[in-house]
Each structure stands twice: as structure tokens, then as C-alpha cells.
Image (cartoon, rainbow, N blue to C red):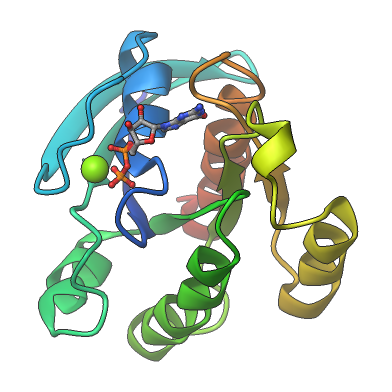
Length: 173
Ligand code: GDP
Ligand code: MG
């Protein structure tokens, strides 16, 4: 039996954008209604993506400390990163700029990254337009997914994309 691929993914972003809700929706298929800003938890998920199994360790970070040294340890742990912003909070998108640069500094430019815009179901409160999202794809060169953990819309897409990127980047062959 070939050894199972194991990857460490880290979920980063401002507080309250929906990092935990996204992670729990994907890992356990539940919606986290309660906001607990302090949660830091590692989830171990066994996933089959493109007919191949892998183990994903997903580190859900508290995400209120993006300006301290705290992210440093998280970033070292990660082989791939899910950068989360809220579609109903434009400032949370700007917060990703700094986090992205912290990751590049530690991991280099060819690091697997996906960007996730959350709370797509709250369409009437939306602050980040589709055009702004497309602009981001162009400028940053990372895939961006619009999701809703509440409605379970497009939640697996970013995780699958990240696993594909990590397989390419860290393949042993
Ligand atoms: P975190 O600090 O980034 O981990 O944010 P949480 O995952 O704890 O989410 C913060 C709040 O937003 C919680 O009350 C969630 O229930 C809510 N939330 C998260 N994702 C969604 C979503 O897709 N739609 C809606 N309507 N609310 C969401
Ligand atoms: Mg959280």
C-alpha cells in the first residue's frame, strides 16, 4: 500500500469572517451558529479528492491577532493556506493583503493558497462585488471562491482546489 498523502492546511483571516463555520461545515457538515472568537482547533479529515484519498490536518486559527507574531507559528505549520474574508465586510478583504505577504515571506511565492469569500447568502448586505472578486483573481493570481457555510454553498470547492495545489507542489514523484 502506498503511504497516504498528509497535508497541513491553515485557515487565516480577520475575526468573525466565518473561518470556523467554513471549516466545521466542510469537516463535519454542520453549521456553527455561535461565534466564539477564541477557537483554535485542529481538525483531521480523511478526504477523497479526484479518486485519491488524503489526510488533511486543518488548523482553524482565532484570527484576531493578525498583527502580532502569533501567525508566524501558524504559517510555519502550514503547507497550504485558506485565506478567508467576508463578502459583507470590505475591510476583511483588505486584511488579507498583510497575511498574504507574511505567508510569502515565510513560505516563498509558490505556496498553495486559495481565497474564500464567505456569507454569500447575505446578498442584501454584500459589500464586495463580483467584479471586485474577479479583480482580485487577476491581481493576486489565486483562485477565489464565494461560499456560504450556512447554506452549504460551494464549501468543498476551495478545499479540493487547495489539495490539488498541494499535491502538485509537494508530490514525491
Ligand atoms: P471566525 O471568527 O472567522 O471563525 O468566524 P465564525 O466562523 O465563528 O463566524 C462568525 C459568525 O458568522 C458566526 O455567528 C457564524 O454563524 C456566522 N457565519 C459564518 N459563516 C456564515 C455564512 O456563510 N452565512 C451566514 N449568514 N453567517 C455565517
Ligand atoms: Mg473561529
